[in-house]
Image (cartoon, rainbow, N blue to C red; front, side, top):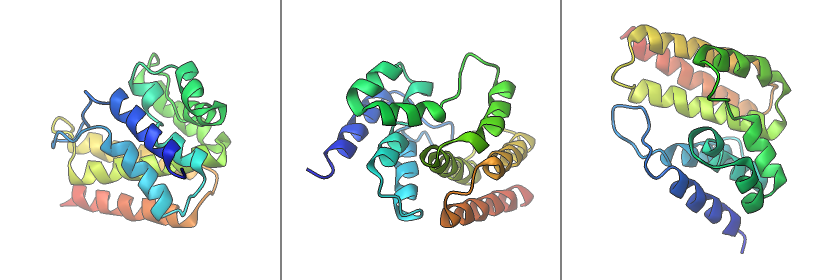
Length: 179
């Protein structure tokens, strides 16, 4: 069946993220985020590559759950594992260092990983505009937008429609902060 692997990835990610919520003020289940990332890739970027869509759905499992790289590979193959690893931060590093490494690593990402990174930043910027974490100050939100733009600018060009969408959401986010 054509969608079996995507449905398996959705189930896997839903189980792994089941107790997590987004940082926003609206207590959104975390699984909505990877679904939105994959949907953006399919709808805006026109991505049909199953490996990229699987990795998009699974992109935060290594970073934010107890999932291991070996487990991902056993379930979804080495290509999905490798792409997820490309977009995974090392949570043992301080936040400032992780953020700097995202900028430094961005130009070297594979096309699939760059697409996922870009869609992830779009989702994060949109969420920050529509429903920011209650404890985030205006300045912290402003700094996040600056950093997200730096990451996106460092990415190799991968999809014009997705890049346009990012800058639309970035502009909307800055407008929210100005009001």
